[in-house]
Length: 265
Image (tube, rainbow, N blue to C red; front, side):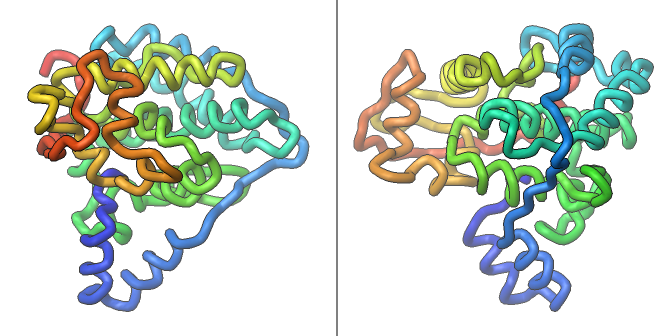
């Protein structure tokens, strides 16, 4: 997921076996799972789980959630059976995909719990056998992986860098897991709120001194997503941060903490 550095991928291709190249080419194509008869689903069951098992810091009570995993499974069955179609509003579609990514991530952690880091649930070969490359997500009749949802669908189909403040990969350096589900009717406000929360969290971004801030590595993982059009990374930061940084700041990036986003750690 968040290890898709462009240079690392290109360097990996030079040494990867044929299967690695094939997997990379797979991620170069888009996907669009859909059901022509589906209608926007209720995210209320997922919302109830988030309110019950996620605290104000965005940390998860995985032990409690594991005991209540039947409710998560039931919600994800509804997700699997009802991928969106063009009759859904764009915000309804994006809310569905953000919730699907985050909820399937929770499910994958629960299946391997207890675990120190989500990375321990897969191999170390990016785009080939990491936990984000495991095809355990059913959408309609096909199986997909977390990288499919993020790289091939959400990033490709929704031109909005705020998705990086909403997708949560179960690590401490990820954005805070929101204690409510995303819903189409409030999605824009929710995404703005996530951006404000993430940029002003000193554990995720250190904005002083303004000439040399230390930003989340997410900005380094996906620089192109924050530089589309005339946008720049400092402009993105200053749009939401209370402590502004210099437009010409020399940007540094914090080391990503992959420890599980679990309560009590």
